[in-house]
Length: 257
Image 1 (cartoon, rainbow, N blue to C red):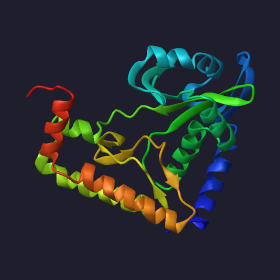
Image 2: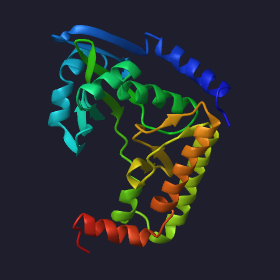
Image 3: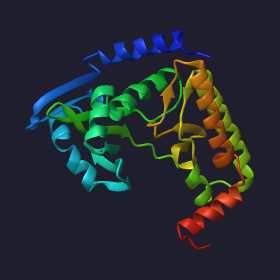
Image 4: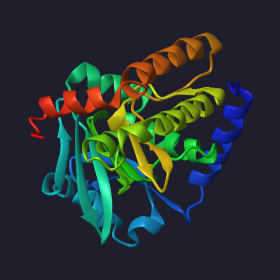
């Protein structure tokens, strides 16, 4: 399993990638929303010369977009910026201790931004992260934003609920998911939140999304424990009777036959 050496190699590649000023622009400014300080990074080719407008208007883009999910921890929306469809995720302020935790340890947006590019270096498909911003006030992270490319492929949930595939085709999908997890685990990584809505299916390829619980392990014991959690989630949520899943979700979502 690639624990220390391989991770160090690929982290160095990603770090070098981020240092390329032709590809990425670092942001550290108090000019966008005084007295707040905005720190982050953006992919230059994604939005061209609209960086200032993007950063200053990110909240409006989120609020005016199509809200996909909102709860105490996060708000997620699909939006269009400079003609490009994107997914914006805001990590909401959950109080002083939560703010202090992510100020000291680094924000979730920053971590997912970094790990997205690491996964891509490891040839694990996940939507490209286009930018992230941390919003600081008096030295503490108040909330953060992550911008990902929009992937139009349906989730495994939609494959079943919208009858894009038949239940007879589901075992082949399960085999693909199992192979994906084995590949991920062999590289010393666990996802931590395996379920139908966190895996997309596009051009017969699986794409992992929602990397908030993803861990790149340094300890084999910790890796082994978290592999078991991924495998249990796979067995319970994915590799189960698709007809029962469809029935249960239709009841939960009040969908008539």
